[in-house]
Amino acid sequence: MQSWKRQLRSYRKLIGDDENLRLELNGFGAGIGTTQSIRNWLESDFGDTIGPQEERVFEAMEKVLPHRKENPSWEAYARATRMVRNARNRLNKRLSKDVIPRIYCEWKQGKKQWRPEFQYLQDHIEEFVDVFEIERVFPYEAEVPQNYVNKPIQVLSVWMEQERETDAENRTT
Image (cartoon, rainbow, N blue to C red; front, top):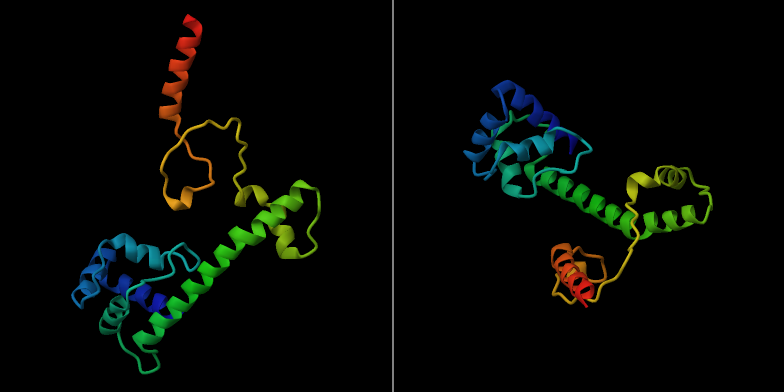
């Protein structure tokens, strides 16, 4: 995967900037909307964006980049990028659903981790976990998207208005 990033970075320097690169790739059917997409792929090897998701972008890269015989095909680059993205997504899901909550609970109980990588997470738990306490639960019904079920949501504007009305009624009686 590093090879296509390295080649694209070099080519970007050669032709001037991200906009020129975007236009050239789009000339071969890449369909890249903004230069920010290119920057997201290339600025960091460990950034949030692994690389393009569409195979047509890799096809366009193959047509634009100077071709060397030892270069893998665009299909190989696309497949490698997809594999890295899938592995990263699985890892992130596992960390957020299983590992971090367990480490946080053990940290709260004062238990020390014995594995160095878990010890690091425990030592820096505030960077990985946002803890908040629910002060009060209000009887409020609302339709929410499925991914918000059983999670605290803020309905402050509606709730605050109801509370003001209730407080006003209580003061007058």
